[in-house]
Structure formats: structure tokens, C-alpha cells
Image 1: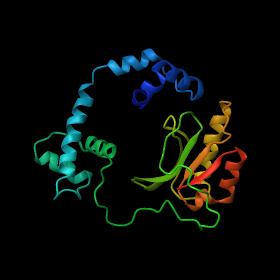
Image 2 (image 1 turned 60 degrees about the horizontal axis):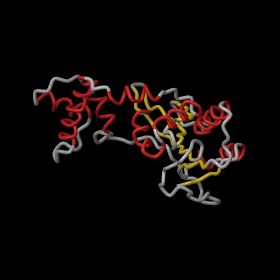
Image 3 (image 1 turned 135 degrees about the vertical axis):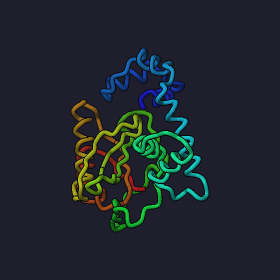
Length: 228
């Protein structure tokens, strides 16, 4: 992920300055030599095979009669076609491709809209870009299916580095789930003596992010709320 990020930004900032900022400001230790070694390393047999299998999975997934196939049926189709592959590998690749089949029943709700009174303005307008750390954070809540039920995950991401600065997980949607993730992010950055003054915090209009305690936490670190 770090190598891909440097690839995107190196023409603007240069490899060495990016590595220096990542190491000094975000505690992501990577030297220019490490980046060049990773960039020039030939792809492994595993990654080549993953690429081949991903193409086959997408071929099945985009077929008109198979668009509703989930992981189990995609794996079964590959086996029927003579491809030797484990179900776990298909599951991992499907997850990375964002593929899931039609699910019977309901998904958990992670966003309960808050009343529209006093709603903060949308300061981002889907322009998710930043030129330095702590300019724009994006917060959200998602869910992960497990054998014991749904697990909710709240996270806060720094748009500049794509780094998750704070997170929290729970098997229930308790009130402070989102606040715990924000608190971790603020604590991590303050521990590194970083200034959050003027930070834009962007989220949806869920009640978790419009709660008084959440708004107060943003005010305490001189951050500005943005709702989209």
C-alpha cells in the first residue's frame, strides 16, 4: 500500500521527501532504498497466480447468468471448469475485488440519520484529496460478517496518507463506537506532537457523528465538522 501511494505522489513530491515525511510525521518507516527494492522486485508466483484467478473470477461474476453468484458458487464454477483452487483463496480474492453475491435477509444498518437541524456544511464535496497530514480525515462505520455474527468497525482515515489513524470494533452498535475511533486518532496524533488545528473531519449524517459528545470532541481539538 505504501509503495502504491509513493507511486501516485512521486512525480509531484519526489521519492525521498515522501519517505522522509512518512517516517517523521506518520511513523511509517520506509527508506528510498526500500521503496526502489520493492518497486523493482519481480512479481512472485503467488501474485501472478492471484492475477490470473482474479480475471477468471471477474469473468464469472460479470456473466449475465452468474452476477448473483456468491463466493461459494464462484468457487464451484471454477472447479467445474477444471481450475484447481481452494475456497479460502477465492474468498480472499473476491473480498479484494469487492464481490459478494445476493444475500437473503437484511444487512445491519450502520447509519441512522440524525435530524437535519444545524447540520454542518459539506466542505469536501467528494474531493477526497489533501496535500499534507491532518488536513482531512474521513470517518465511517462498516460491518464484517463472522461465524459468531456481525462485527461493527468504526474507523477514521487520514486522506493524505490513506492511513487509519483510529479505529474501534464491537459486536454491537453502542453509542461511543465512533467516538472511540476518533479519540484514538486524536491521541495518536497528539502523541506525535502534531497540530490538528483546522482539521476537516468529514462523515455522513449518522447520529453517531452528530452527537453532542462527538461534536465536543472535534471542538476540543480545533477540528471542523463536515457532513456529506
